[in-house]
Image (cartoon, rainbow, N blue to C red):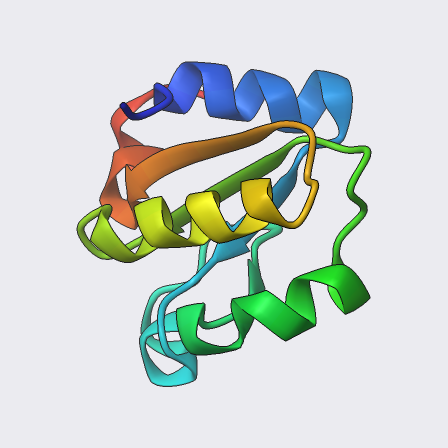
Length: 97
């Protein structure tokens, strides 16, 4: 289940949610979302605890939603309290700010 772009933007604005792009560094460089940090899926298990706050919401995304779904499961298993899957990075532009 994906979070809507409106809900994701609300979480970021109101609850300081962390926006995490789990695509490869090359994909990240080719199309960045404002405020997103890049933690590739293959690195999420060890980099997330170094770069993210477990007590703030996390919104993950990728190209299609498959990698972000896996990242959501990994983060949840690591004790992150609130993790949401935006799905595709293209969903970001489908709603107003």
